[in-house]
Length: 68
Image (cartoon, rainbow, N blue to C red; front, side, top):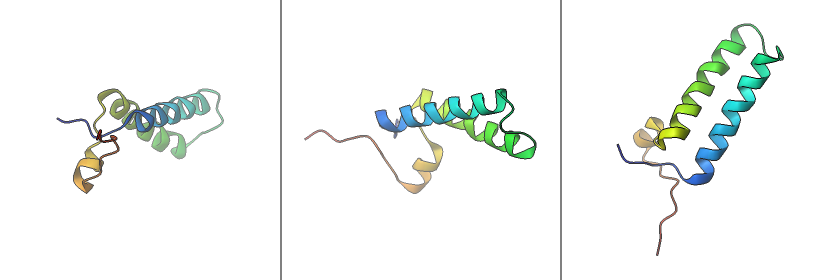
């Protein structure tokens, strides 16, 4: 599994995952939206740790900067 996410992509996904977790923890998000966003946050967290996004792989996207 090759990495296809750059540094800023990983950082942004991690921050979004933490923000969603905090919003659910402090009951700002409730109900079905909370469950949907927690699922998205878990996926964002895992992809930020591994550096690989399956959707990027399917679409042929690579956010890693190429060295000249």
